[in-house]
Length: 126
Image 1 (cartoon, one colour):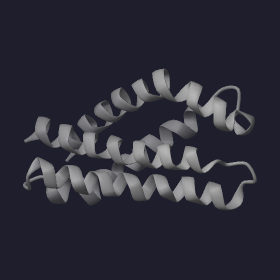
Image 2: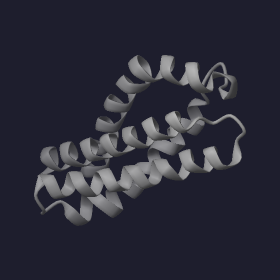
Image 3: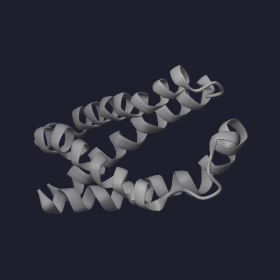
C-alpha cells in the first residue's frame, strides 16, 4: 500500500500542479482574488495533499483496485466531487462573495482529478 500511496502522491502533485500552475491562477484571481492570500500556505497545502490521498487510497484506490479502470474512475470521480463539494458548497453557504461558478468548476476539477489519480495509480501499481 505504500507504493500505491507514493504513486498517487506523485500523480496528484503532477496533475494538480499543472492545474494550479497553468489554468487556475487566472480563473481564481478573477473570481475570488479578493479572498486569496498573496502567496499560498505551502505547509497547509502539503498537509491537505497528504491527508486527502489517505482518503482516496483507503476509500477508492485500494478497495476497487481489482475492478475495471472505468469502475475505478467512477468511484474516484464521485470521491473527488463529494470532497471538493465539502469546501466549495460550504464556501458558497458561509462567505458573502464566493461565486457559484467557482464552486462548480472546482467540484468538476475535483471529480476529474480524483478519477485520473485513481486510474493512473491503479494502472501503474497493478
